[in-house]
Length: 312
Length: 270
Image 1 (cartoon, rainbow over the protein chains, first blue to last red):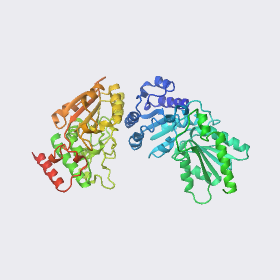
Image 2: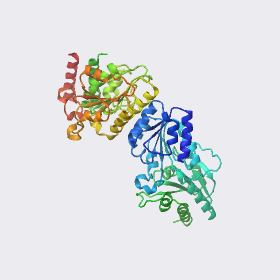
Image 3: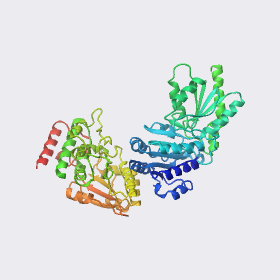
């Protein structure tokens, strides 16, 4: 996703001199080509995220389109108030781009586990919250974020995520993106869980359960009409996120579905528990531990379907 | 513009606003009233009929709690009808207690401390990149300098040689609960800015001629940003408010309001 981001950002910077990239002293190797190609549009502000957010707002107030880049918790939580008061309240053209969403840097410890960012950022007024599901979405959404005025949070993974989409999907900011159909269960995924969600759907198919998969790359504003339609079509909506199971995608979807009257889907929220991860390790390891592997996902889904059938 | 008259007027306006609204921070407003009067009366390039005029000097009040004085200065210099000040802190008003960019002429809303200087630094960086000649001023409180975010911006301003950036510290030596020295000592304060490679000017923050000289900064290539440490008196202009921690939060009502009004009106006539 990082490479897709930098490619798209480089295109934006070439087209529009107002585009700037600020980094909090991170992105060795990743941002170097951008810095070399667009030196006047690149600024390393040092290890100072609060200042980076303020600088970004100052630049944006003077007409720039400013991307701030860091690892997920640093340019979000460290400077949360600057994002709220300075960026969001002024509707500044600031695009907060974090790498390492979820457990990408799982072995580095809880400081680098970005597992509450979606919930926190989703609560900020005026902020659009975007978490692409694969490199294809990351490239398209980077462009959309850059071209759309306003304050954005763009949560990326790192490098090397699999391309999930086949062909050239029509990725539209704020629109749910269906990858496959299925009449029994609707799996909704945000961010880098998309590949596991797709594998889970394939495994479910082998067990006779037809699951659709939809990428909710924009969780705020949420594509509510798509959620409502799914809630009417299937008996079970499953949200999958590399993030705590409250306040992020699961929370957002539950808020919509809970407001529906009449027959509607049950919502199963699959995500990380509310405590800190008790262990560290690779992204795959932590996904396994926290029930976010394809096996973990289908186990929860099958258990829930059993409950539905037998009325527990 | 007569900056002394402007200072008297904005003190009086702020007193009325705070009295009507029964709000706080009159001491913090009075301590920086002369700086604000000199900025709006003499220093800032501005067009009140065109608040977003491209070549204007930018001004950010980082100590947003003293916004009433800036609202008053904007009204006095023609940005909007002074009668609008009467809505200060009223239900539905844009004139909120901490300064709001919904008010014509206000660049940025603040209220939480430590936000103004980083934004100002970003604006100054943009201006330099654009080859623009305007300057970016911001007023910080002394207690506000406890916030680490300021020092991030102080590093940034010096590193990038933002000579178009002017940080003014309203150094009245008193913060919310006690003196600065008792709370979190800043001294040697000027030296701190100097070793961060800022150009430092210390002035009597109530001496208008000295303020004009200090604040009329000309950006020069490869120059340093400027810190004007304005030595001020909290509550300046009303004898019983001066140098008193009490008047950070106490709201002037009843006989105290009347007495303050008398003092300010006498001073204005003198």
